[in-house]
Amino acid sequence: MLEVANVSKWFGGLPALQDVSFTVPSGRITALIGPNGAGKTTLINCITGVDTAKSGKILLDQCLVNTLPAHRIAALGVARTFQNLKLFSNLSVLDNVLTGLTVKAEQSFVFSMLRLPALRHQERYLRLRALESLDDFGLSNKAYWPASALSYGEKKRVEMARAFVGDPRLVLLDEPVAGLNTDETVQIAQHIRQQRSAGHTMLLVEHDMELVMDVADQIVVLDSGRCIACGTPEAVQKNPLVLEAYLGRMEATA
Amino acid sequence: MLSAKDNIFYFLYLHRTGLTVTFLSILLLLWPMVESNPYTVGLSNLIAIYVLVVLGLNLFIGYAGQISLGHAAFFAIGAYGSAIATTTLGLPAWPSMIAVALVTVLVALAVGVPALKLSGHYLAMATLGFNIVVYTVLVQWDTVTGGPSGFSGIPYLTLGSLVFDNEIRFHYLVWTFAMVALLLCLNLVRSGVGRGLAAMAEDETAASTLGVDIRRSKVKVFVLSATLASIAGSLFAHCYAFVSPESFNIFVSVDFMIMVVVGGMGSIWGTLFGASLITLLPEWIEALDTFKEIVHGLILVLILLFLPQGLIAGLVESVRKKIALSK
Image 1 (spheres, rainbow over the protein chains, first blue to last red):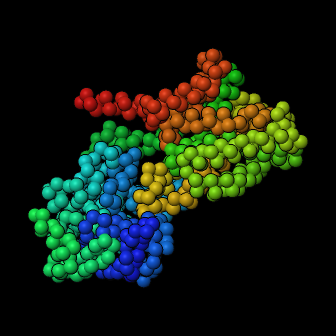
Image 2 (tube, chains in turn brown, red):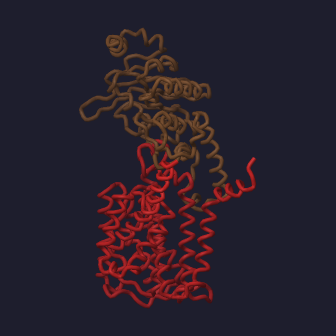
Image 3 (cartoon, rainbow over the protein chains, first blue to last red):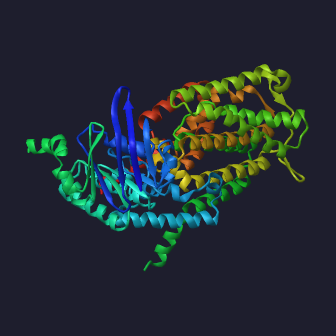
């Protein structure tokens, strides 16, 4: 599915990513963990085209994507959520989810202006898809609310609905439970598992170890821009490098 | 099961846009039969012309999230283009209007592609500069444009044997254009393209990861708005049979901006209100005509300070909030 090979990225003289390599297998959940500043979000930004990797390759189903602009990568079926929510507060919840279908819609300017029957038909279909996706995330009763009126946890779920609505090949979840309480975290974990059983491939960036150990099939550990471990949750938990760099520190404070 | 009454409400809700457009069109159709004063009808014609310009500008400011202080320049290209093509070159009016609109598309591309790499203040300055250039050309190139004293003798538009030579006839023509443009713009913002634009106005990064081609979308909206301004300019020239550079200076561009802000940025319906209010204000209160720039500036500042969503949208929202809180 996704193959990250020897990716490096500098911000000025500071290396953010150095020679990072791993693969995300299809239909699984790969978790990307690491202490703050390890380069997780930078990597996600590189994969989605928000940032460009300095060197190395990012392959999506054997297709080189690292030089493509963000909207082209989106068109290839990569969707994401953001660490700090990026919902459109002026739009309704439903319209927010509908923006996740931009790629699917492929509407042209002129045809949109004419609003021919074909377009109305498509809009009706897209609306149904969006409502289904909202239903999956338990928000169909708030479809017509302005997005700004939702709680933080609900907004996180709208972002997930928006990411999954277009049936993307790969979904990147950037800290989906950051700032949520235990109940909401459990709920999100359920949604993530549900989406996996629906066949979605996910790359999950998260600090919440409980969630990561719970849902991930495979874990990639970054530390100071380097990939220090990669494997099943059990293997990674026992990896001395990881314990030292990350989990060890956590246990020491606990 | 829905009751008959619910069904009616649902129908009204479902077709609210089409129904409102139809209702407004009927009002406009009947209005000249009630209002016989040609001066008043003439004013409404001017509003329709401004509506055309401001619709496009509103998409550009409110949906694409960009700023232009140079739309009077495209308005000018339409007006002078049609004037020169029909009067100097003796070409037929309708094909000229289309040809001039196509030229405007090219000009907008030439201006927009580099200028839209800028944003915020820089884009405002670039478009302002473009307006000043066009204005200076209109004033200085007097062998072609007639210079500061203007360009006269522009023929009226005709449709078969019908000549649009008085306010009432022109009313039907120009409001047809305005209502069609209104409908097209409403359609655009209700589509996926419109949602993409609204997303882009709020957050370009998020919009691009959803598949919106930011740069192209901006250029497209810019070209669309320039084209609408050009058509409005052509109608303006044929309506008054006379154009002069003063109708296209930077203060006119600023007025267009104020119309957008008064109507509400991103509110297509608000455009009608914004264009009407700013056009009619000096008519209602004569003193305002003398201090037009000051008053318009004041309106702009007050609205941006207290009702940044626009006059109508802002008032509606504050009333809604009051109602919601009193529940």
